[in-house]
Length: 333
Image: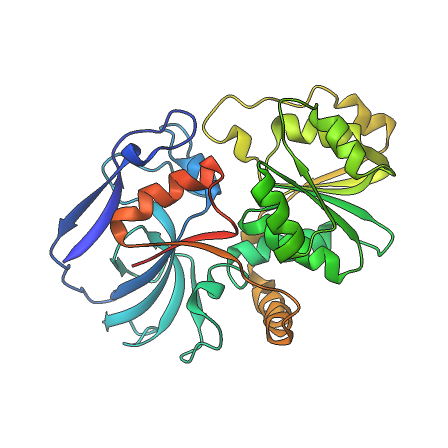
């Protein structure tokens, strides 16, 4: 049987487990030019929330239809193939859907994996997957780090943030992370290797908390959250600092809170650059080679928040928005 997580209702604000349901059907026949995979892991990525609204289609992906399998990244193995480019046993990381099995004609976003995996399979969805690509290109290409920089990272305890912080440390920068709890603050300092943490609190304005952790200002802000967090970071940026915009989870599916201090970008001569990893697909091998070497050396780690079973995929996605995850969120099927 093939089990699929479908979009049962359009999320209002942050998604909840009830927005998704599991349906089952017989495994499909494999037509000529297609192949069938067994999906072993599902990657939960906040960015896919953008395409769950009815009018959310764009040049990247179409809007997700109701009662259809939810799009997402999976780690898969080919079970049966009638496609000339894919053979039984091939291991793939692909943009299929939240399913135990997928039928593909090969036109999906697909990356081949080695037949013998060197690392834990989940690492290929974290450090060596789109998560790692976002952290790698954002820090090494766009941030233009120097060892004199202070780097501030929002969503520091999440999938991208936990890796971006490690890469920034390897490049010699002072790294400060913004998180939502004291537990995550301790984790990014003691386990991930951040120099300091800022905990969001109703008691202290975020801009003041950032200033306390970064008394000499911020040179690079790597943003995964947007909204009020971006606003607070702009207030603390140094002259000619760099804003690297990787995500904006605070505005996914809701009316976003736009920064009210954009004029400071002008007066401080800040640079602002957003990016999508998929536009750098031709450089994935280069990035994976470097990230793999760092994994071998033990100088970076691939933290994960893992649940088990197709029935927990919706919960895992909701947990991501509730801030329950420490590192990359995956579900083992």
